[in-house]
Length: 413
Image 1 (cartoon, rainbow, N blue to C red):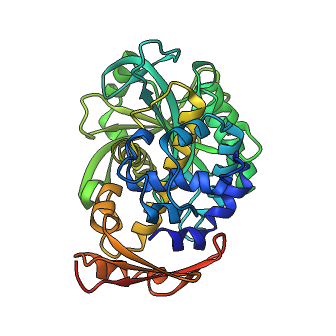
Image 2: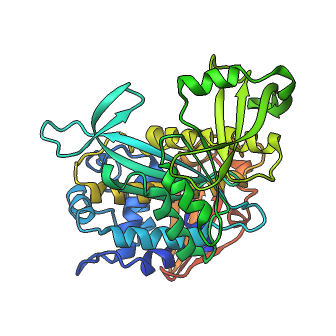
């Protein structure tokens, strides 16, 4: 069911342009599409493919008779270089593009992916789910809050370059799209004040929004601000519930930062101590500024989906380049689901596991005549909604295979 969407978006062209490795038997497209097939299924590990490795339908998805065995896929992933992943990400940034919706804002967050090997050579990182430091792979995920699409990933983050990840993403986006991001939104320990200064003093003067690192003196000074200097701001919260926040809008100086930044102190947000937002955007309205940072938590929801459905929290290797490739394919699969979800009326806010369970997980009878493929989907409750999609109503030519595909509903389940 994803093949017409892959054709429409030009995903195969992006894969070819990335320069992935190929063998004498398997092309680069067939290899990457094999990984993508397992990702779209929510397969936990490459070694857990016994339920699918003789399925001819999945083989057809990758232009093969059946998918390659797990040993072949595993050895292939070790050959992938970061440069190819980056080229694919650049291609996907142009594929998953919606000028009418995009605002140029990006949520950035780190994800520590634990590795359970006894002789792991990885660095220690703080793992929030375990509330302790563990040997893990530190990965960066970047999300466009306007579309819910993941825009960038990098699993090759080290302690020495962790603070510079934000500048690396800015360079990536400028090279891929030709324009810089408008605003970057991240947590307090994501980068340094020196890098905030670089963003502000850059030629494009990139906006940032982050939390200030909170100390005892900051809280003490906030509590000493007179009542008449505060204002009440109403913002929309979860499930369209509105909340009244007590807000102080002012300016402050930071170490290693030239000039002043705007500081917004929040109380009444459900925490005992105030929150300190800092930004170099002095023009944006208070309510809009607060709402932008509240939406940053959406990237954590996307990470939770990646963990739950795409199983990025269970790396089978401590070799970072392999995990980086896995994360790149996870990003592609996630975005395909998001595009699909955005066109299903009433299901726009559903998670990937829900969409997979209600729409994708199904059986079918595949009929092949010459170069025409007809997929007779078994009857299912949500199937009529699926057939409202434009590409489900018509025959689609898959240019890289040289075949056409169309869908029909079977008369029995």
